[in-house]
Image (cartoon, rainbow, N blue to C red; front, top):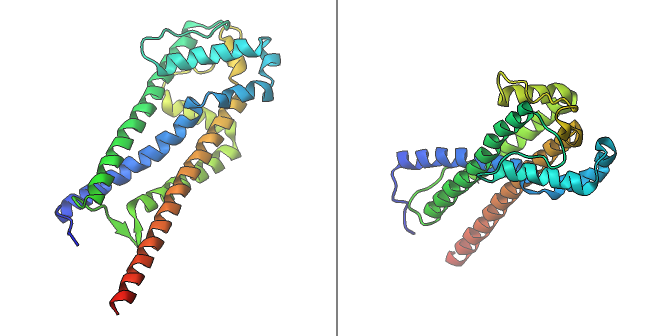
Length: 237
């Protein structure tokens, strides 16, 4: 059996990089779920009664949301909200959001690339990612990722309004343009807090799901490896 050629210090550094990148991958992938799956908003147009709340049709609301998402995700787009009026401050807030949306997608791509390269090098036995208690670095990273939505979920459930304020204070320090006036920024009528709460649930559920898949895959790999070693031992003796 070929031994891993990289020295121990390199393997430790690679493991640390892998843990950081994999955690970012799980988190950014989960955050991207409500961003990239527009159907998640579409189904809430009816369930949250947004036509009644705004006085606009389903198609008008959907077109406005699509225009905003296109602005947030695609380069070279000017901000617009369909038939909904908006203020300069409102547009400025969406410009701040655009940076965060693009950052999440960029982190998703970069972290996925790093994880893929490290795994390729690991399986090629160029480097070796560390393990503990019989489980891989990915397993323990996934365990840590599960803890995050549980803790945040408890805090959000205790007081969503306060959590919503703290969230904006952290992401938009020193700014209050996220406090929309429905008279000047009509789009807020179809972006209620209930929608953002559902987004938080979607993200948390996604993070738990991706972590669970990682944990299950690690356990299955360990079982397969254990069975292979047992068969090899039995054949030898």
